[in-house]
Length: 344
Image (tube, rainbow, N blue to C red; front, top):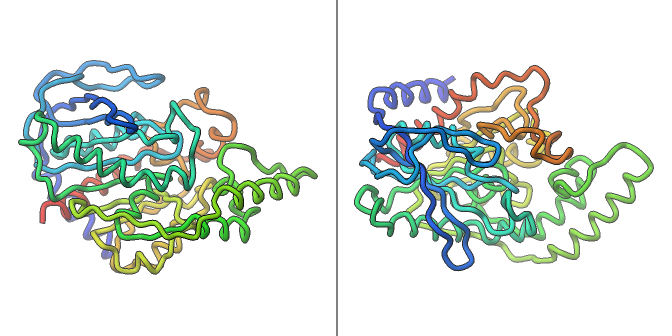
């Protein structure tokens, strides 16, 4: 109840001081091996329909930015993701005055899914840091932003990235050990979209083959961390977290909050978000536990089922009867958290 009261107070403050502006959208070009960075930002220009793949959004393309609240929030997309499935959150953040930037993670995005899992997780934090550099060095945004109070939000694999920015350490070998112990109970987390269990005679073969590949590919005992002193607040949504040392997040390096979903079939909360929340409370905040929400509850707008394969559609789909109406309030809690902790 105390957490809800704090959130309510923050929401009132947010409503009282929110910036009123339209949403601009532009893309910073790729640099080196990094992908493009999509930026949402306050603008005075008129919005129009913007078509991106199966999504139709409202925004002002390549419009001139105007000053907001002076703070940048980075968004790390999930495995196989893109910026557009986080555009509702981006709009809520821009409405509050934030500039929002989303790097395309190499080898693990909607255009290129060649290297998901630990191979991507090693690269993602540095990609986010370089994307921060790109936005802060862009002459359109540099005069409008404070360089030393940046937020990071991430969902799913992006939540893994976010926890790394909060001071967490993780190891590919820890991923292997987790899958060896829980391959049946957490099969989607260990295997991804390659295949799934059907409760038939082939399940044993699938589990054996999966463990063979996992042991071979991720035989790396090193612990991985990433520190960017500009990042001062982090929100991790339904994160992959079974490969973290939970003790490393018992005292987060920065302000940390989590959003969980108790109907998550892709990343079972008892193996992922649950141990992290247990380790970091009360030094972190649980902004929301989405009752009945699946892994894709934080995708807003969600991708149309017809653009997903059958496994992804099943793992990301909202459970029958799930009501998306309250999810806008979850976005506002995320906005309020960043406003409170980046304004200090």
